[in-house]
Amino acid sequence: MTDNTPTDPIPIAQALIRCRSVTPIEGGALTVLEDLLRPLGFTCTRLRFGPPDAPVENLFARLGTGAPHFCYAGHTDVVPPGERGWTDDPFSGEIRDGLLYGRGACDMKGGIAAFMAGLTDFLRSNPKPRGSISLLITGDEEGPSIDGTKKVLEWMQANGQVPDMALVGEPTSQVTLGDTLKIGRRGSMTARITVHGIQGHSAYPQKADNPIHRMIRVLGRLTAEPLDAGSDWFEPSTLQVTGFDVGNTASNVIPAEARAMLSIRFNDLHTSADVRARIAAALDAEAARADLAISVSGESFLTQNDSYIEGLQRAIRRTTGRDAKLDTGGGTSDARFIARYCPVAELGAVGATMHQVNEHAPVAELRDLASLYRTVLEELLP
Image 1 (cartoon, rainbow, N blue to C red):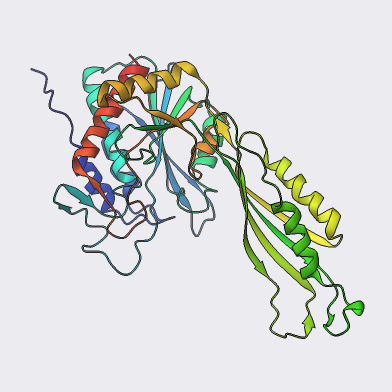
Image 2 (image 1 turned 90 degrees about the vertical axis):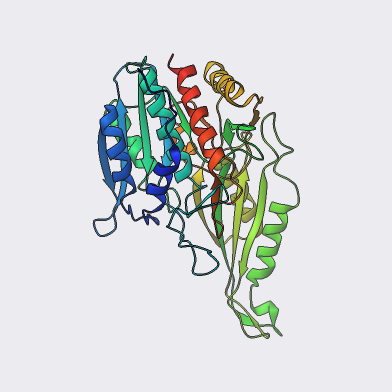
């Protein structure tokens, strides 16, 4: 007789939480997953990128070789717990009053555990599923995101492992499980501007060139008008001045340079190149001698693959009875890298306590999430 008892994600989540995998330390978390995946028939490949003295460990695991190829993406690295405020050891995985506590319980070891439980139950009922299933688990999502998902995807492309669709298990639900399905994200970039002037005495400004005045005019041009009014799927883009510094402690000295920092979140009406050109034009107009350094963490993306999104919506409706809101809000995630290769969406638990002291996730919610992930696989790989 087949045992139809659902696999419990809680022991898996506890085992992962007890791994002190603060970025970029692996801490044994990927080994926990390998030990669960290999008996299910997955081929596991450990991928190490980065400097030899501080490498980042990543895991790619795949079952099957056919199409369609579904990939679940997540991260086992966590942010530091901090030094104060925790009721228990942040890596203990304690359960109190129906809540699982620990760093990563919410973001996102709990979500990975739920997928592992749902995957196990799906394969119990579908030992030879249509197509193939893979997991892309990184140890560099909470850090620089240089030697994690981005590098693994390059390896996947070089080795014929690019999926047909991917689901990132970030905690994207807002109030209740399944109320939100993320189908896109805004782009994100940082601009660092240095305007050069000529130092001088403030009583003789004609003998100097005040870079602060020039910087003020540059920033005035950039902030006078909004970048846009939003698009069909995205809220308005934002340009925020997040830093201004001249390093001057003397009230009677005009400094030689002024520095500013901008944080820009842009929708699908722009590319990072467009935004860079806008900043460069303001500098050309107001500050001929200036340096501009741009760091782009990701371009905006929108997934409009109807069959994939509809399959995810059906799974959410079957499991929770809810019609998920299609959403593009929030910051960035590793979905920004995956979007370059295949349709990607994000679906996970409620992210109420991620990165907080006493981070926790409701036990019942993680079990419901496991059921939801099983239903996702049933819908996409029947």
